[in-house]
Image (cartoon, rainbow, N blue to C red; front, top):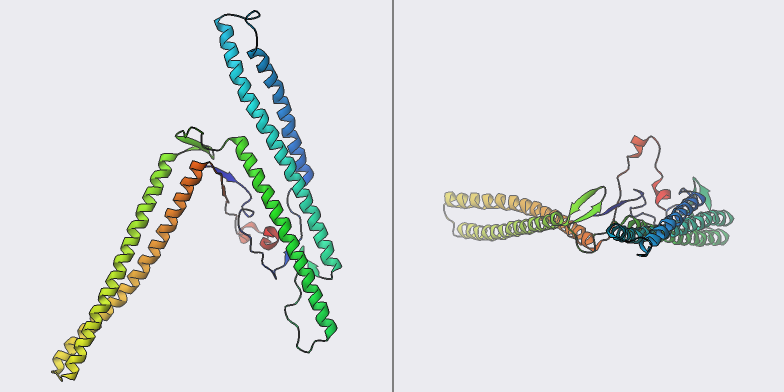
Length: 337
């Protein structure tokens, strides 16, 4: 299972909804810094080009210049190294281009947030704490028409700000996914094309056999949990039928005016069955909850195996420390937005 670590907050789904404050603060890396790093990666690719040429010239040495068993071995190794260095060169070039493209996206994102803030100020919306706050939700029934028109105009401006922020966010996230794919290609963190036993991931080796066994075990646990839940439900249904039958017998004894001892004995039987039924219903609810958890674990294990075999990198968000432990408040809405 390949794991690509990214921003712990960026990997989560944001909760930006219409009516929430719209964040307009740029807090990512400066685009120029990202662009400079992309340029350095591409320069490194250009240096690798020199090695590619050197290996190519060595592999193409003629027999007239260098012959013998040692010469043949040298040419074979040089040809192999030429292919490897050419692949590294191409990956470095592609990664450099992806980083440069990402810097352009960040630059447009920063400019878009600046324009968004300027538009909100010009539209008369409240901008505070790097957020664009929505207008008041309601107006008094007897509000004058001028106030109603201003309120309507403010909400239309907020809608424009909200839609613009969503577009900026989606464009940046799409570029982030492209960059992650380029990083994965460069690091070669996909399963081997020949379905080798191991796949690199997170500084260790993950055995596909272990993933398959884990998925099979989770699936079996889910089946057993569902069987237990079905058994618990059948028990509830059987106790319900027995309770109804006992109640019917009790009614017949009362109508027949049987001795009080028989009536009391039947009533005790009904009460005992009712207690069993209550306990069985609790056990059935618990069994259903366990079955749901086991099914969710089985589904996750199956997705993990499918992603590993398909060579798709998975984004794993590392949990960040709570705000109280960090000592500073976490502006999640603005961070996610």
